[in-house]
Image 1 (cartoon, rainbow, N blue to C red):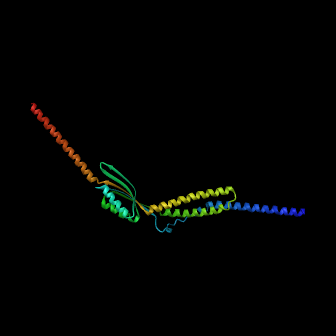
Image 2: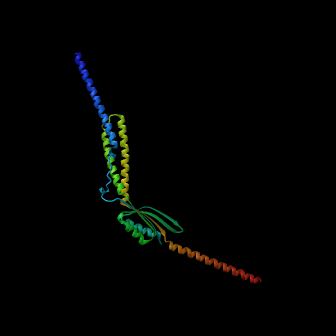
Image 3: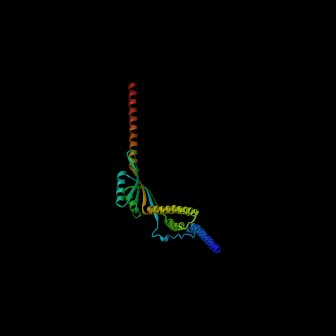
Length: 249
C-alpha cells in the first residue's frame, strides 16, 4: 500500500514538472514571437510602386494680385462665379483706407476649374502678379499607404499575441507596442486624408486692389492744382505789396 502511494505520488510529481515545463516553453515562445513581430513590419524594403495608385496625387495652388476700378463690385462678380461653379470662399479680409478698399480672399475650387477661375479673374481685372504651384505627392502618398498597411498587419498580430501573453511584463510590453502602433496608424490616416483634401481642391489666394492708374492720376492732378494755387497766391501777394510800395512813394 505504501509502495502504491509512493508510485502515485511520483507520477503526480512528474506530471506537475511536465506541466510547468510546457507552460514555461509557451511563455518563452510567446515572448520570442512578440519580439519578432516588433521588427517584422520593417523586415524587407517596402515596394514603392506609385503605379498602384489610380491617378497621380498633385496639389495645385495659385496666388493672384490684381487691380480694378471697383474693388467691391469685381470681388462680388468673382465670388458669384465661384459659387456657381461648385467653389467656395474659405476666408476673406477687407481693409479700407482713404475711401479705397483692398480685399484679400482665399477661394477653393476643384482642379478641373482652376484655369477657368484664373481666366475669369483676368477678364475682370488687370493681373499684377500671378504665381501658380504644383506639388506632386504621389510617391509620398504611396509610401504612406504601404507603411499604413504594414502597421495595421503588425497591430493585428500584437492583438493575437496579447491573448497568449502569460506574464505581466509581456502584457505591459505588448500593450505599449499596441499603443505606439495605434498612434502611428492614426497619424498616417490623418496625413492621407489631408493629402486627399488638398488634391481634391485648389487654393487660390486673390488680392483685389484699386487700379493704381486712376488713383495716381487723381493724386497728381490734385498736387498740380495746389501748386498752381500756390503760384497764383504768391503772384497776388507780390502785386499787392508792390502796389502799396508805389503808393507810399
